[in-house]
Length: 111
Length: 116
Image 1: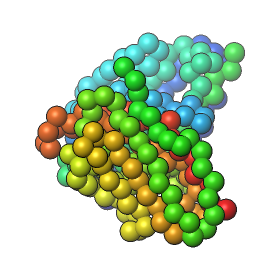
Image 2: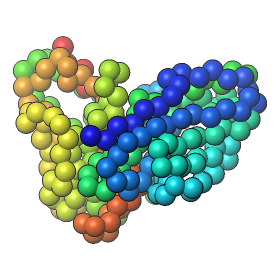
Image 3: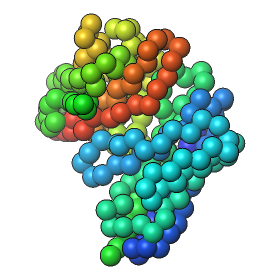
Image 4: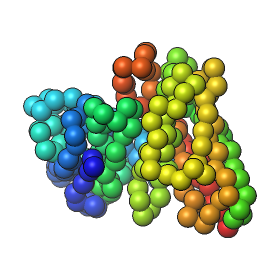
């Protein structure tokens, strides 16, 4: 069974204090790993897709990396508007379009 | 380009009733997937529709069903509602040019269902 575990569950940072969120996964053949951002009361917002170990993608203050067992979302010099829940999901080769999500990391950035 | 739209945004029902939720995908997207989000279980896959056919189904009882129309719009139905069905129901659309292609999924704002 495909599994995704995210840590920490919650993270408090001061504005400008860089950190990383972790997503560990076990999957029977990875098609892709996805990162989403979700604000309260809204649907998840797509951030990145990573397909193979060693791949990296960047968007503003966010950088996602992928290994064979885990992915990291690095946040550089975060701002209060980066506060949200960050979700990681995997798509397995034998599971069609289904995404298996982790529990998320709730990030709070204080000014 | 308009995003994924879901109606209604909020719904209150009582146990035993049934409910139908609607999702309009991004223009040109042919795949619609449905997810349930609860504080205890997180985001869980319900099913996916592509070319009006259910392609994959998650581990939910038969009370949960769906369909897709020729314009790619989708509906999901929950019959005989239970208290535990209270959740945010999210719809996601993806391009999926054909049955063997997979693309990023873009989510709608969700329908908040409360069962009393």
